[in-house]
Length: 136
Image (cartoon, rainbow, N blue to C red; front, side, top):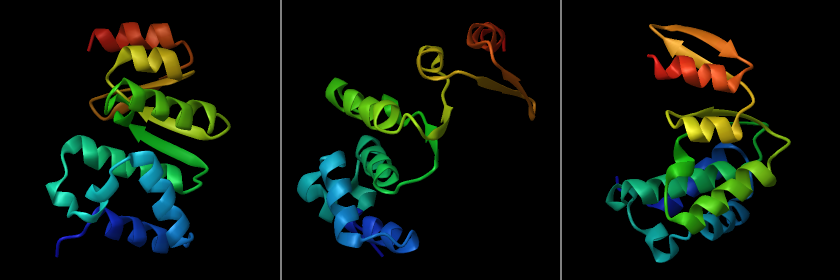
């Protein structure tokens, strides 16, 4: 079966029991995929898939967000749009941001978790965490 972006939005809206029409509109407005939303997702570029997934995440009002490198997708205007959606509009939400980009960690995080060999250590000092991460 070839699911379109629209099919994916409808499915996620049903899973989370949110209004389908409103969710489709939110995702369409944010992802800016236009008519490509009606095409099979398997034809999307990785950037288009990331836009769809990110927009879907924002369309549902989650208490905690898990963000995995997605803010690095797209052009400068889309980066700004992602920044505003996450760090301005949802500043009151809990977030777990996964990134290898130390600049992103320094800019957006107030704690860091470094994983090595299946073990993790939490740091309140971001600069120290980044120094240790650089030695891995």
